[in-house]
Each structure stands twice: as structure tokens, then as C-alpha cells.
Length: 327
Image (cartoon, rainbow, N blue to C red; front, side):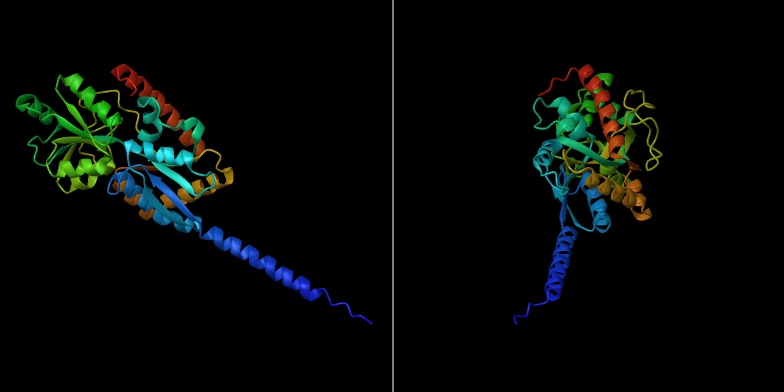
């Protein structure tokens, strides 16, 4: 008589193999590397912010989170890379207003359309831009700087900006127009090289974000003499706003947010947004970002998208009024 082998061992083997497959898949998912792209070189304010967040996000997401600097063209290269990335939750873009809201207004063919190619994941802060003067400049205030340039002239009115056709560059132009000064912008590839020239006294002034300036301001290596926004900044209570100095119209403040390629699954976006909300609520993270001059606060993807749209509309009007033509 032929004995038929019991199917129990076979079923047990299949269970073991199935469980092993699930474990391997789970391990692979846990070990996924997430790229957090930044459109500027290492050493600047945006890069520093990204590294603070990436260090904490890895624990919340259970994945390795690396900061990838794709510097160039004011964040345009990074934005184009985001458009080309697979919408699988492995690539995100940490950006402020310039790359998302301003570039499409000043570049004819930026190579991306934020409304079509990106999806807002979450916002985490707002900030203001500031006007700073280098340590060797004898002026101690914004008005003293204007008087110094007017009196001395001879090319002293060169003002560094982190990117061409940026909010800082438009600010320089409008300051020059208002005060009848020959101010010229010197556009850099990010705030880090601009700061290097300011600290070396190669240029006398610069406009960038408060996070870019604040540490060197506190160290006395340069002086922040004016900030944008409707009120003075908690991190720089001694510094007046441009409105106080007589230059109104710059009260709408920029933002920092995270963006993903269009088509990224909703569940992935929500998971990242929730992780980011937990990270910025951590006292050490909140304090570090606040000390850099940020106003920290979580925005959902929908709230960030609405904020970006409103900001772009505001600056579309300002840029049009300036007479600037998209290049």
C-alpha cells in the first residue's frame, strides 16, 4: 500500500517562507533611504535647517534620511530633479519661497511647473529676509549705510544676494530707487559663498534670510540693520523693520516647506507630514530653529499649498510693478 506524505510539514514550510518574505520586505522598507534635496550649497541656512530635520526624521520614519545638495540657479536644478524623480516616497525637496514661488515668475522656462509637477507635503516655518552690512563697513545702522554710500560712492553700493532675480535682488533694486542710490546686486550661487565674501569684506552689504545672518550677527562679524515683515523679529528685537524705516510693501513673509513629485501616494505624504509635525514639536529642534530666526509652526500640505499660492500672487504684482522681464 502506498503511503501519501502528510501535507502538514509542507504547510508549515510554506508558512515559514511566507513569514520570511514579509520580514524581508519589512526590513527592506525600514532600510529605505529617503533623499531630502536642498537647492543650495552646504554651509548656508537652508542646508543647516535640512540637516537638523533629517537627523530627527530618520527615527520618526524608520528610514535613513540624507540631505542631498543640488546647488545651482537658485534651486532650479533641485526643482528639476524633483520633477524627474519617481513618485515613490524616496525623494523630497526642502525649499523656501524662491525656488517654488519666485523662479516661475522670473524665468521663462524654468523646467517645471509647481502646480502640475509638485505636491505640497507640509510646511514647518516662516522667516524674513534681512539687510546686513559687513564688519569693516563703518555704518552702524541702515540709514548710516545709505549716507555712507551716498557720500563715498565709488562702487561702494554693491549688495550681495543669494540668487539672481530673487526677492533679495528686487529689494536691492527698490531700495536704490527709493533713495536715489546706485545700488548694484551681486548675485551668488547661494548664501554660503555670499557670506564668505561679506566676512572677508569683499562686499559691503548683503540681503538674505535671517537664518543666514544671525550667528555672525551675534558674533559681531557683521550687522543686521533691517528686516522685512510686519513686526520685529523675536530673535533680533533690536533690529527695525523696513516699514519702520519708511520702506513699506514687504510685509508678506516667505515660508519653508517640503515638496514631493506629483503622484506621490497620499498615505506617504500624510506619513511624512505627521513625522515632520512631531519633529518640529521637539523642544530641542524647536529651540534650534527659533534661534536661527524662524517662526516654527506646522502647516498641512493643503495649508502650505495655499500659502505658496498667495505668496506667489503677492510677488507677481511686485515684480510686474518693478518692470522686470522674465529671462
